[in-house]
Image (cartoon, rainbow, N blue to C red; front, side, top):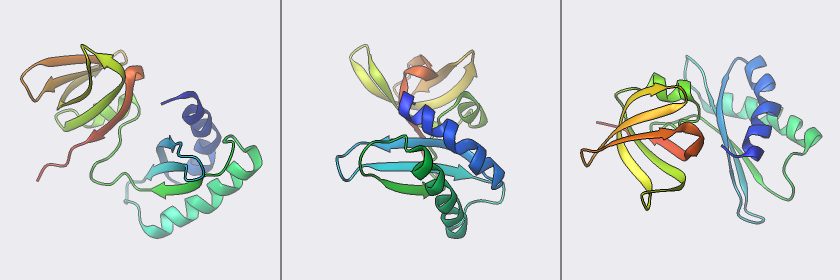
Length: 152
């Protein structure tokens, strides 16, 4: 998560928590006037459309006051879905044994995209058994994006 996303998380977390939800993370997709701020929320009871609407209304007010993002953007509030994004060490730890797809912020041995199964999480490092049989240990800070891969 970059500095902008971290700042937005800090602004929004108290509001989202006060509404009874967990703020999983945020993604900012810079695309000029089509930029998007995606806010992921969760709760033990799951997330429905009304939950997203409630959080969107409150979060929009916070963002209007603090204005952390320059220019135009669309706000999206979403459930994590089946391909749940993973942002923090506790997210990875919760899904040890699950399949994951990750993109690193910079190449490792000439590669940025990896697929495998989460083995463990320790001291800010995620350990992955790669689909090709190899092992990967990577700092969570070096992960640009990570999602669970649904298994049926």
